[in-house]
Image (tube, rainbow, N blue to C red; front, side, top):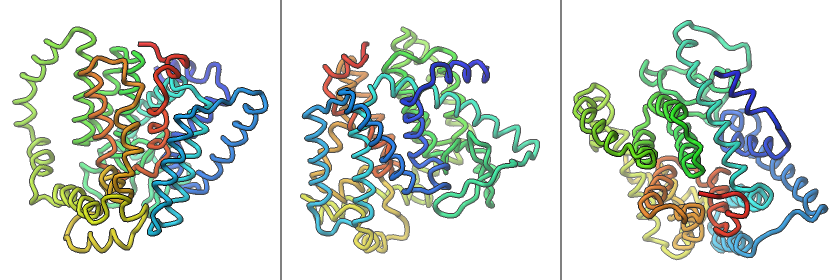
Length: 394
């Protein structure tokens, strides 16, 4: 099966496909964290800039007024605040500049197609983690090293954490990212875009299901469940889904996973639940103090002043932290991200659920200065007419 997928994936491989793959790897994968971090972002900006110049020379590069306007509105929202951290602002500027060029050069359908295939490969290989752990197989490659200095065994398509941890944490599937919560974002995003373009076969669905369960990410499984509602609804199996829920819900709530993980995560007596609670409270208080232009992108001193008041809370709620950083000006980003034009032709219920899932995807992790966040924002701003011209047809 792996050989068949690889053969399909690498057939008719071209420069655009390589750029799409690199855009995912630069989105804070273990390759990004290990081999250069923001230097890779600058290198990728130069690469896509050269490609854009080539397309411009051939008169194949056409910017739309809407995406140009969004680009400058975001720049104003970031740099109008004198308290913005220059380093963070420049990283974000690199992200949105790449995104502007990227979505102009690469149709949304093409991006989705390559992204979907890549994630299928990464998900399949990620399952090899379990026999490797069971058989105590070591990797011959140099370790991946995260930004925080954690080491991961390098198996090319995924990494295995090498530090001291519980057996349960070791079994959680993090794929090619530093933690399962980050991996689930890419899994669910691929699933969402696959549903959008009707790419999800029955076999693909079960692959997504198996891998998302192995992450043991509560938010990931929740989002996948919502998207599954769309999947079964389209297949006219909604009655089957409801029956499965009725049967499985008592079993799940009685299981040790529910008692150990889910119940603890919804109780403020649990450190993780308390941290998530304060991750919402802290940015909301910062937003209340500067509601118009925010505290400034990357303003760590103000963030530390607020987080120091609580025993828990890191300010890692991505969406609310961006709201606190940019104030109401952040809605220049939120609107095309959460209510993208590429969902507009869907039935109202599917459009609503899609928007809810996009919102939930970026709440648990601080992905706001990660490239995939900017790419989705700018693709979401493309007009429906342009998207249809580029191949969006559902």
